[in-house]
Structure formats: C-alpha cells, structure tokens
Length: 127
Length: 134
Length: 284
Figure 1 (spheres, rainbow over the protein chains, first blue to last red):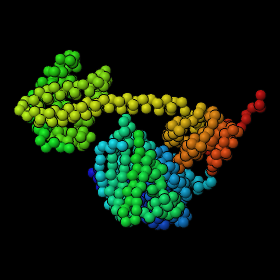
Figure 2 (tube, helix red, strand yellow; figure 1 turned 120 degrees about the vertical axis):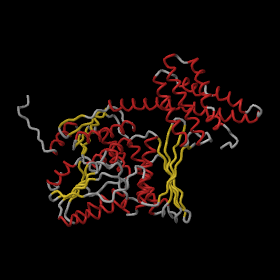
Figure 3 (cartoon, each protein chain N blue to C red; figure 1 turned 90 degrees about the vertical axis):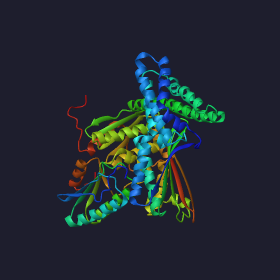
Figure 4 (cartoon, rainbow over the protein chains, first blue to last red; figure 1 turned 90 degrees about the horizontal axis):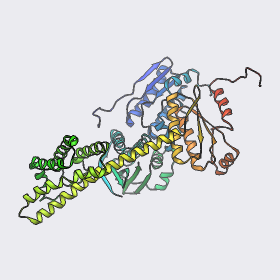
C-alpha cells in the first residue's frame, strides 16, 4: 500500500434513534462496498430503521461501482420502508458523476448531515 | 507523441484496483492537474482497472507521463489477456440501465478522458488506453 | 543506451572534490560577492547529486527515478534564481559551465585515447545539455502556471456568486459564455453552494446575448451536479430569442425550473425555503 495502512475491513454504522448513520472516511475497495451494502440492509431490519444517512463528504472518488451500490442501498432500504439520504458530495465528485452519466436515481441528497437529518425528520415530504 | 517516465502495476485484486486509483491520483498531482481533472482521470482509471479485473480476469495498468512541447499529460493503458470483447461498438453503447457493468465503465471512461482508444478481439484480450492533458 | 566503456560515473565520483574546486573558482570569477556563498552551495549540491545519479543510472535519461533528486534540486534552483532576477539563460549557463572542469578531467583520463575522449565528451555534453535545458523548461512551466492562475482568477472575478438570501445564491452571467468561462462558473458556483450551505442557486442569463448547444449543455450539467449535491437550480432571464434557440436546438431542460426574470426566480426560491414576500405599505 502506498501509505502503509492496511485496507479497512468494515465501515462503522451508527444508530441514532430511528435512523442509521454511516460516515465513509476511507477509500473503499469493492469488497468493502459490498460488505457495507449487506450490513446496512441487515441493520435496517434489525433496528427497524426509518432512515439511512450516508455521509460521503470525505469521499474523493465515486465511480460507477460505488454509485450503483448507493442506488442499491436506497432501493433495498425503500423495500424495507426506510428512506436513504446521501450527504456531503464534493463538487468535483458531482461534476464527474454527471460526466460519467450516473444520475443516482432514487437516492435523495442533501448538502450536509444537518440538512440530511432535517430532511429525514420531515418525513421526506415532497419539496 | 514522445512519452517519458513509466510505471506498470498488476491488477489482480480489489486492493489493486484501489491502488490504481491512488497511483493515478499521485501521477495527476505530480503533473499539476486541477482537482476536477484529477478526479476525472482517477474515476476513469477506477472503471477501467475494475473492468480488467472482472471481465479481463486480471491484467496490468501502465502509467506514462506525456510531454508534448510545453503540454503535459497522463496516459493510462489497461491490458488483459482474456477472451476479448466480441462487439466493442455495442459495449461502448451500453448504458447504465442495461445492467452490464462493462458498458458504463467503458463509455464513462471515454467521456471522462481527452483521448480514448480500445483494441479488443476474441481470443486476444483487451487493451484500453486513455489520456488526459493538463 | 548504456555505454559500458564509459568511465564518466567513476570519474564524477572519484574526482568530485577536484572538479568542484575548479568549478567554484571558475564561477567566482563571474558571480557577485553576496551570491558567491549561495552559488558555491548550489555547485556543491549539483556536483554531489550528479555523481550519485550517474552511479545509479548511467544511461543519462534524466527522466528516470535515479534522477528524481537532481530534478527536484534543479526545479528549486531554477525558482530560486528566477526570484533573484536571473534569466533562464543565466541559470542554464550555470549548469553548462560544469563542462569546463569536467572536460579537463576527461582529457587527463583519456590522455592517450582520442576515440575514448571523443565518445566520453559527447556523453558528458549531452547529459549537461539536458540538465541545463531542464532548468529552462522548469522556468517556462512556472511562468505558464502563474499566467494560468491569473487568468482563472480574472475569470472568477468577472462572474461573481451573490448570496441573495439565506440559503439562496444567484449567479448573474454577463457577456458571451465560452466553454472555459462556463466551466469556471460551474466550479465556483458548486463550491459556493457547499461553502454557504445554500439549497437554491439562481442562474440568471439576462446578460447573455446568445446560447449555443455547448453552453446549454454546460448549464444543464451544472444543474445536474448541483442536484446531485442536494441543491436545486433555477434558470432565470430567458429572453424570447434564447427560448426560441433552446427549442430550436432541441435542448431538453428536463425538470429544471425556469423563470423569465430574476425577480420571479427569487420569489420562487423564497417560497421553496418557506419564506413569503408581502407588501406592508401601499404602492406609491
């Protein structure tokens, strides 16, 4: 590894009332992304969560794999009657995703965790 | 086009794909790319490295710094020796919704790069080259 | 392209101090008193790095990894000398002047071997020419980077992003939009959205005479990127001619809200964030 650190094995998921909070702070390899997808689904069921907030403000790269994973998480959450909000997308990432042709359908977004939580608490009323 | 400075990496695992991103980032920084340009080429590299791993059964990534007069650029080559893509035009056309990961990766990488070419034939593997200029 | 008979690396290593002594006394003749110490230090470092690099990689391909330290040093040297007012030629000449003491040593070493001397001199000349030219390129690149930065700053200054209300930004675009400018606008708008936490951005194109397909695409991409980040855009100031062009070009505005005037866009934006505008005094 270039920076001498071994790859992270798990992304921590925090429970906050009826919501689950995930803050992605490391570069993720594909297996880690899949693991997060699985674990989130499990925990939504386990805790009967109403919402999932994924903070990607530290993610400098979102490629089609991660984009698809975020979309999948939102879809699975909806099947389990929970909503997903992705927050903190960096401008460079947003510009690149648009160029890539990924539109993250079905994924609600907000500028930061605070707005994301407000969105979830309002019960996702149509804007 | 004269090329100087070269590095080659194996792509045989998820971690390797991640390493390709990191190495691409460093090369882009060294060449003085803006943040947006860095992000574009690292994302393109991620798509192509993953393709080489998943559809190519593993392969290599070659990094080259390009100098053309005062211009500087970064060229990445992704090679695998797998079965090859039977219909390249089709693969490039596939959109996100088709479910074929190959399509979005290739088309996306092309849209994110200044230069793109692909050579693939059944039985001869696939070589994809992209370049981004500062 | 390694010349296996080349003794250049060995000569540089074994005769380093002698070459350096001759070189610095040569340089002292042309350098001014105050700079003398610094020039000597630069000369010492150059000679040392040259010997080290040649020991590792005698091919003389200065882009290789063995020459990284030398390249870094020369980059710093070029910048330092530029700051002191040296022209790029002066800095390159500093490098080229190394040839004199080096060739003196080569003449001694190859006293009875004319062919060897010729070969070795050629290798040494090519190497030092490359290193000297490298300093010139560095100088040029630094200048280019600076000009590019100034150009971008100018572009940014001419397209301000204004906070109209808490949570509402506006970008009044004025003049013709080219691809470059639209990109700069896009990037600074998105960054301002993050910095200010605005949920709505109004892009006003009242001051834009024409909109072509490329500009329209850039605008749409900006709107899409803002939406991905969690902010909505409203495009205002669409004059009838521009509306016609947009339809004629077949540009699909999709679900982007559009308003004829900035004022209308502001009312819409305020409504979305839960504020209303009322008149408290009768119209004059």
